[in-house]
Image (cartoon, rainbow, N blue to C red):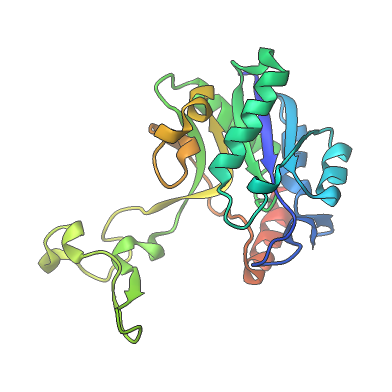
Length: 243
């Protein structure tokens, strides 16, 4: 069950400027995922991929090895999957003995994780040889795709995001939020993946290709990566109860 961790974050966020280093419950946001990795009993090496000097200082304080994030992967349009893939390639080229380790993937702006969640996820993946990954997932039935809407071509009125026929006979559908069964969202707190997921990331399942295809959930009542100010009180409450 030996594992490594990769935490990624960049400077220059436009949605919530400075989010990775803003103080949340008295600590920089990026402190929480890296501190969780530091205290995992299975993680032998922790890495931080960033272009942010402040994040680098936080990472060094938490015993993380730095991987410089190149300019082309430090833009608002850069995909997380490409950053993970690049960082992993850099790691195994320098530390080939780590090629067989499981990989714990973290985001600097996803603080809803602790060492126990990491270790439980690693154990869950190790117990299922058929699984490609274990990811934290929350049940949000109120966000059923049946309820999703988008603006029509006129940009004035709402219409179904996907045709109702996608869910079966429309005559049998209703507004009950539980009518479609549990709706699980990978909440970005944690992904634990096998090496093949990053070695063959282009073949992974959308939208988070690093998870592979056989994705096993580890259930978490709440978790999220922070992109909006309204999420901060929710995260602070989670930290109060779980850190």
